[in-house]
Amino acid sequence: MSIIGVKGTHDVFGSESCEFSFVENVMKRICEFFAFSEVRPPVLEHSELFIRGVGEGSDVVRKEMYTFDDKGNRSLTLRPEFTAGIARLIVQNKLTNLQELPIKMYYCGPVFRYERPQLGRYRQFNQFGVECVGHSNPVADVDVISLAYTILQSLGLENVTIKINTLGDEESRNNYKVALKEFFAKHIDKMCPDCKQRLELNPLRILDCKVPEDQEIVKDAPKMSDYLTESAKEKFKFVLDLLESMAIPYEVDDTLVRGLDYYSDTVFEFHYKSSKGNNYGAIGAGGHYDKLIKEVGGPDVPGVGFSFGVERIVSVLKDDELFPEDIYNGLDFYVMPMGVKSQASAVAVANAVRMNGYSVDMCLDDVKLGSMFKRADKKHAKFAIIIGENEIANSKVVLKNLRTQEQLDVDISNLRDTIDELFHECECCCGDDCECECCDGDCDCDCDCDHDADGHKCCCHNHDKKEN
Ligand code: AMP
Figure (cartoon, rainbow, N blue to C red):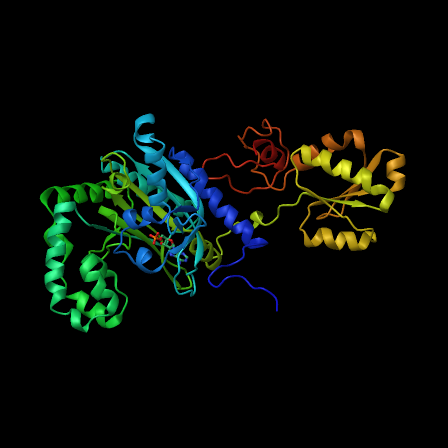
């Protein structure tokens, strides 16, 4: 019997790989505009980190962790989320002493949760997120929400709803927990076994219960907003006012509590409904945390962060057909050696063109030219380079434009310049008043497509290559 992938995992390949890379690259670029830098914590951490950091009362820790003892009898866990690991990384490397605060980091990679697999819910999935650690100014909360919103907008996701709430400070939450305990104690006999445990460990978690009968009870539970201290209320108002002044739309949702125990004050989720009406639920979520860094042995400094589910964002973009067409067409040249004797020259030509900044693949089989053209077509190659014994004898290759079918003989010594010229003969341009710097104003194509919003959409591949 053949071996299949583990339940709840999925393979990413082919065009989907292009989609994942596109999403992650947009996210990375925008994080860098916001002065966040990349961090790559390990997948494996001591289980204790998540028990203390994420919280014993959370579903993630109680039911969903991939935990095992290693050969040295250490309890290790495959990270179920990034934030606790990043807190550990910051503390262990003493970054709060060594770096200017706040420390601003972004991450991307797989996380593991033993959940019931279903549409959009995996056991191994990818998260992209940020953490901003070490500053108590609530402007940091808004900066992080604004970063997430900018990413979603840049991906073309217009129908995003930002749900936001506050969990208040410690005093607010302690008062609220007492009220919740009192309320749920009267109903707990009728509630699910999970809620019975939640009542003991953290009654806030009951608000998250998905059992319909329990949700009916939750509807009448006390509201967080009635238990906020004045300073927690003020902080939340500050955040909302700032979001408004930045024209970032939001909906206050006083049932939003988030599933990880470290959150305090501002919490938020990004929800999306596709234009076909498919509801993807939360495509990302995050919030402020006051005690996490201290909890894992660091100084008493707060942080704020969010995390996107990359799989969900890829699905949403697919559903709304928002992936740009050109993310799939990677191949510039397909090199076709005619006969085994031409293969050595073909490899040399392919490498020379690659070194010039173009993507090049080569046919490794000794097959007929027609078959090689079919392969080039399947790979969406823009040009073919054909090399036969005659060409080698004359130090030439045949260069064929696979869209227009035009072809020309080129001296190998001129190949580089000819290719640059071909790519400079752009597919698109911007009319006569192009101000982009790529072609010093003397690009002579005359199509009339629009500039990018920033006025700098470049007309020619040549420029793209040099920029990359
Ligand atoms: P969380 O760390 O629970 O706040 O989740 C952050 C984001 O990760 C969510 O908004 C989802 O988009 C995504 N996500 C969470 N759990 C899963 C899962 N099991 N499979 C796929 N994506 C998930």
